Amino acid sequence: MWTKTGVKPSIFRENSDVLRETMRNKCLTVVGGGQMARALLCGMLDKGVIAASDVRVVEPSHSGCDWWAKNRPDVPVGDNLASDVAESDIVILAVKPYVIPKVANQSASFWDGKLVISIAAGVTLETLCSLIGHDRVVRVMPNTPSLVGAGASAFCVAADVAADDKAWIESSLQSIGVVAEVEESHMDAVTAVSGSGPAYVCLIVEAMADGGVFAGLPRDLAMKLATQTVLGTAKMIAETGRHPGELKDSVASPGGTTIAALRVLEQNGLRRALIDAVVAAANRSRELK
Ligand SMILES: NC(=O)C1=CN([C@@H]2O[C@H](COP(=O)(O)OP(=O)(O)OC[C@H]3O[C@@H](n4cnc5c(N)ncnc54)[C@H](O)[C@@H]3O)[C@@H](O)[C@H]2O)C=CC1
Ligand SMILES: O=C(O)[C@@H]1CCC=N1
Image 1 (cartoon, helix red, strand yellow):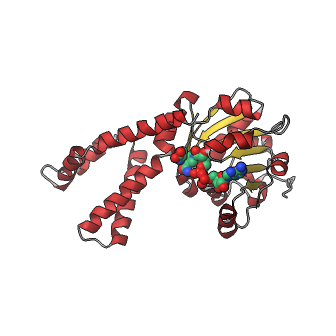
Image 2 (image 1 turned 30 degrees about the vertical axis):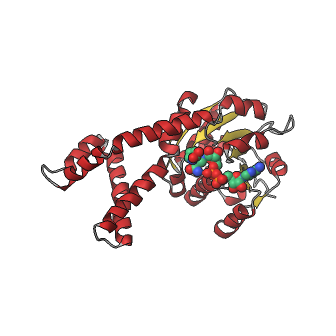
Image 3 (image 1 turned 180 degrees about the vertical axis):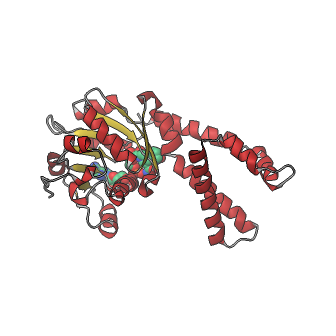
């Protein structure tokens, strides 16, 4: 069990005084302690914008509980959904989309007074609100780099989400990356670009490193160079605001190595493959409804 401290809530430590005041003494329960919950919560804990004593994780699996015990023993983890939700002000549903109905469909007053946030791909606000029984519901699509404070999240809100609720969501997500409020109609595309995106980028880094190994580099050096190249290029695009096409052209010398490589990437359809991949993910997100 955790108790409300009655002092300045650590969850809002980095937020404005007004926000701190409006959100005093909030407790947060995360339902499902898997990959994305770990990235979100550990990111926020590491940034110091949330304290382990202010949160609780509901996780039924032994392996899931073991992970928390080994990696974040300061976070209370249990399997009693009803008691944790009863004591909390904000609940994040971080279970797989097909588990949402099982978790959300509870007795009439179960979710009364709770801000409910779902991170499940594809599950609409309409479905969530009808399961929860009220309209103080938010859909968030985060991504795993939240773990290291470099996440990209988007959210949309149902009718009864207050300005304070939105301020909490925005500031919490901002503490672990960038955040945008979007129309719900954009959530499938968001899922396809930034929600699933880390997987595409990991594949690219892995493949670049494989190429380096084929060309004679030791594996660890190839991986280090590929990783830093992706990191540095993303940082350069974000910080200079220059178009990626222009930055690409600045690397490719006439008759040089880069243009030889770019020709092969175009011949093998990398650009088309990535566009089609994003479209496939958006279509799949729509099917998850
Ligand atoms: N993994 C990712 O990169 C992202 C995932 N998401 C969304 O986050 C949600 C969770 O995905 P992951 O963390 O990847 O899955 P996961 O399988 O790693 O985590 C889900 C957790 O829920 C637990 N669980 C199962 N039944 C439960 C119940 N009745 N009550 C409480 N916990 C229960 C499981 O034991 C598991 O630990 C999904 O809806 C997914 O669409 C959203 C953005 C990115
Ligand atoms: O693969 C999935 O369905 C989830 C949603 C976005 C990232 N992972």
